[in-house]
Image 1 (cartoon, helix red, strand yellow):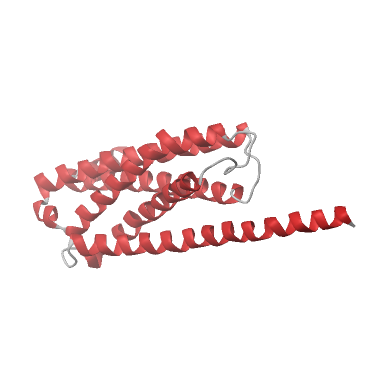
Image 2: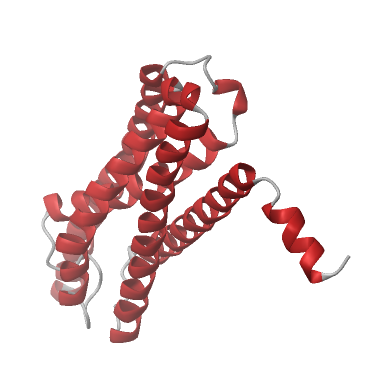
Length: 219
């Protein structure tokens, strides 16, 4: 089969070709966003215990954030493209609750991404030469971690939903979003409990060191 025959085969069904292009670009955006978001979360977890943030670390975080933003833009372009495609070629899909659940999660991702770019990234840049949480208030610490949790759970959400065809026309949008909210709440609870426990443990340990030091000075 020569090049012209391949091109002819690909263009023989324009509707299917348009659908395939949208799917490919959509999954590229999902892969970029999810991959970069996971890298960011792993770096934040790596530096939470008290490692000093360097300028190079901050540049890498900014680079990953730009990739996440690019993936999010691709999701929006292809998501809207799918809606237009369904309007013309497959209107029954416009009442598929799974599609609208994914769109709402992408909206949440967008709002969270805006918050990260406007609040979290400037904060991390200000921490160069210091530990990640040095000088941060408890509220800032929880906001930083919360933004990461929302990002990770919300990127995995569309991935799982897209690969569950049994949800098509069977499960209402609100039920899908309820499961997403339950998972998000569960992750929130576990992570914040761990942070609270770790913070309480550090407060308990700190006075004991001070007493031991004073005692050693007296002896």
